[in-house]
Image (cartoon, rainbow, N blue to C red; front, top):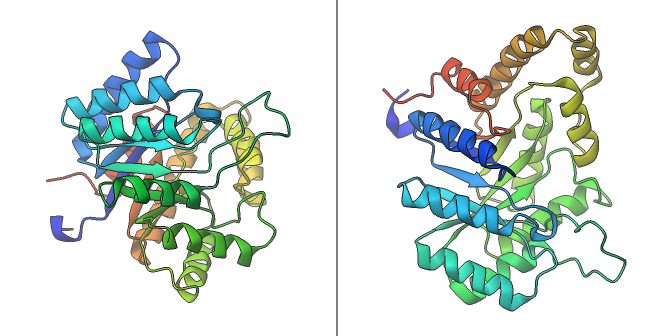
Length: 282
């Protein structure tokens, strides 16, 4: 594979809560840089709860010459607070952003007004023009709160119509879900690239909990296979590495424009898959 047809590659982190976690993450980021990703992204906690940690990491990465994209949602913040935060990112030289609806802050009652991702995209475009490349979330297996598949596609189209440049999907383990989703997106007039999100399989219990919460499907055969390993974590990791590598190969071989890895702040599971795919630079 030549550099000219090298697929897009990006890695996602979450802000650590402890100095030890931060030190580990900075080490992981440094090692993952060997793959020369298009960018790293840093998530934003429910209701903006990790705002300062996210901002600190984003600025740290950028100051080290690393391409980075902060995740952003309105959360419980008002327009002026969010506008000031975006202005700070622009001033720092950040040129990418992942615009999300975000999760409801915990402990917030029914009076909370949810501001949707298309509104955030429109807000950023209104105040900052085309300065930022804006990525948005996409759901091949349907957002858990969507009324229907068609509704979800229409909502995604609304994000692109508001000015989004690309999409990143929720993770999935059935490649046909992604291919069917892309067909429906194209029929709806969506032409922007939508990068499949990839979740390495490291811990079955954690994966099950995440998946049940976010609506990502673990196919029944896969659940049964993982359950059969019991507490044999080495076998789970080996099987997961092989399975996810095959998934990525299938996606790339059939036209996916790249891969976005949910790293869980770990190096080895992601690095092994990327190496198996032959995506490391010469």
